Length: 449
Image (cartoon, rainbow, N blue to C red; front, side, top):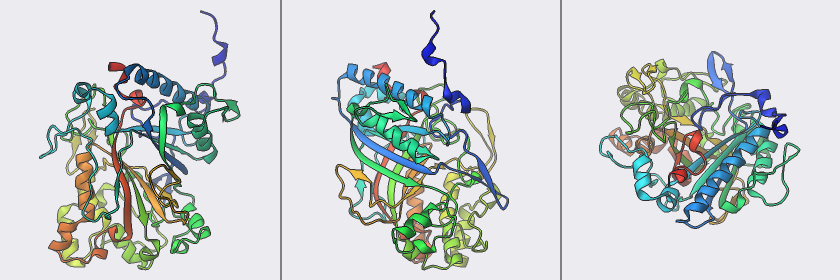
């Protein structure tokens, strides 16, 4: 064979990493020591793009062509910007409308994971999102076909990638012409959502824009609500968030098509910062974690190790003794292993290990940068684009119902402000999606039609 001179120079090899089977693992992300607490240094800049497919359902040739084009486009971007925080991370997820409209029912039913959780057995492990008790009346339950999440330490990398993928005409990736990256004709973009996490940006950006309460955000805080959210011990490590890894959630095995995939939840949540910071430090600490925490105000990263986990019995004792249930105390018994577990891959996971993963980021959009269907306000507002991954959407529903905590509020006669921090949040949009494994991130199942 003739020598391939077009591939002589491969800059991606400068920071070569072995791409994980999952899309949600982030190789190259480093850790910091926050007074003995390990914290992941998450990518600084984020963008989410949602879209509908622009070609008709039922045109299987068009779908297979789109699969090849999207795969080639993502590969071209990653040859210029290596997989890592100094390059770019690209995650591609799919809403249920994609599977319902573009993939034959028989094929989807054969391959999409099904729930094994009590009361939901046999349901697809990703189901339509629902309204929760404390959602506002104007909450939007979204139905996008596809969702891209881009993240990088360098905003320019994201901007160039968005241009190369979605904007027609000559585009440049790191000074090089983008030859095969354009796939914008495959999609009708529905929303663009931008934001950040870390480096003191919440306070700096919020204060500059005059958002009420932003001047109270601690200097250096990674998110608007002040406390660090990327504790290593508070985020699922490795492939623990996948459909198949932990027993009891879905029916798929390590060799199945969607192994390495996960149920993704996407939502936009506005934050009433001025009300949150009207509380004193310990009131915020207790509502974020639990009423037994006593870290001083200058500690933004209280430990999240397994021995700090609150299970149901302790949560109830807190409610009786302190009349407060913290957000972590609400969530931990559903997001941590209750006993030592052996995974589908033979890993031995100790009690108290977290298996839910968050990759949320802050925003000042109200609610998005761009939308074809939503009414946008130019007035900046503190918020978070929540991105979470777990073994099934049924599991997330249990988690989110626990967060609203209506049952506990009634049982223990708690005022709303003493139950986590839902009183200070307003969810405006939400959707459940399938995040396939990396090998199938370009239009999953299309090649099997």
